[in-house]
Length: 551
Image 1 (cartoon, helix red, strand yellow):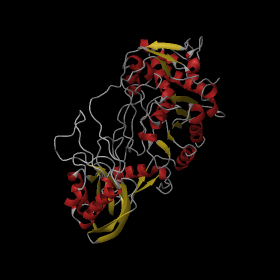
Image 2 (tube, helix red, strand yellow):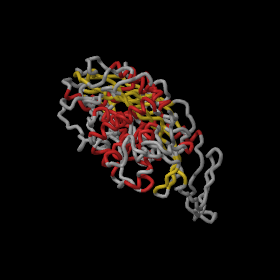
Image 3 (tube, one colour):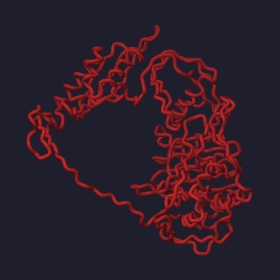
Image 4 (cartoon, one colour):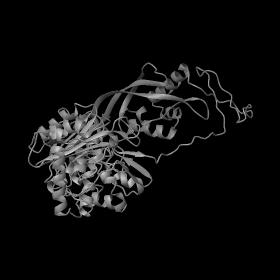
């Protein structure tokens, strides 16, 4: 039986009211060459102060401003160049750093053809650091805008004016690298490189940042981007090497990855324009594969923050069974509609299961079988279950930047929506794979990519385990889903210790929901998300199945 139901609501709409605001509008000429007179709110001429030019910039204004800035920077007149921007202090600091921190000399700036208000240009020069020299060349651009107070054309200052890879707080530097290079290897000793695994480029940089000084290597001299410290390990970017002046000696760093499974996972997600997947070893928590499509995009697999949809029902079910509110073979209807907290929830296509059991509702992923239990729960029940039993929302020490799941305490309709993985619940494939792994093994093992023995860090722990009957019930529910429920198509042909759960998470202003799928086969668990694609079993299911086939 295949029945995929939809999270939906009727009512509870929020009205947005647009109101008028008194004021005036300044109209510019078509080419920006003619100054516009400042007008008062009643439309009368100003008070005699000099008029301020407004409207679009002309080609000559863009060219003159860009040329003045580039000429000043190239000549070494940092103060003059900075004054031609809209942020003199930040520009002066960054441009001074090019020579003092990056040690870039003989800078030559060659502008390209103007594209509207944007001017691309080539930066070239020579790095000179403690007797070592290297030529450097790269492309970036600037944008000219009109200063609101003076009307004059100025450079819209951004860190990318100096280098396209710079973000807020980042700096260009040349010197001994902060971390020695590493030779990352998989669990079997096979080397993992950026060339062979471009999807792991940022992860390899993160591993070097964290473990370079623990892997036994020696640093070299590099031209690099030093990233600002964000204070958030989930979003912290690693330093980026731009040019190596002298190579260091890499130390060998063993990871938990499995090269063959990594290849299979990446091949599977590459069949989608956007997709992410993670595989873990339930008995230990070791991360076996991390894959993203596109390969050089954001690492959604371990850093994403998305509503997990019905995959969250695994956690919700464990809570309901632990509390004695249901059990697999207990009568547990799934009505067409449930009203809670002022919202009316409906199943996809207004489907229902009138006289079925909880197991049937779980296998069919029927939403209102879960929403209907909200009135029996405290606002923090789901949060506690997710944290204390499944480790979600704790601080994980995976060895790389990761978002570790969030199941906030909510009330009324939002609490009810959280029961089916909507509302404020947020996860990524790493978190969802860990949920399946916890069911398979019977207890939570925090995922990690580098053994904690290397740096003696502490891993997150579950404060309590599910009741034995609950653990057994969850395995039964997930196996039923894999054999005759919404996960049967993707899991077809597998037998033994298997389990699965589908999910479809709706997103505002998105035509199709995000597709989720998580499953295990023996001591291997995996999860995948395929954004804006539809049903979990049809779209994310094949990705997970390809990974399980490699186990």
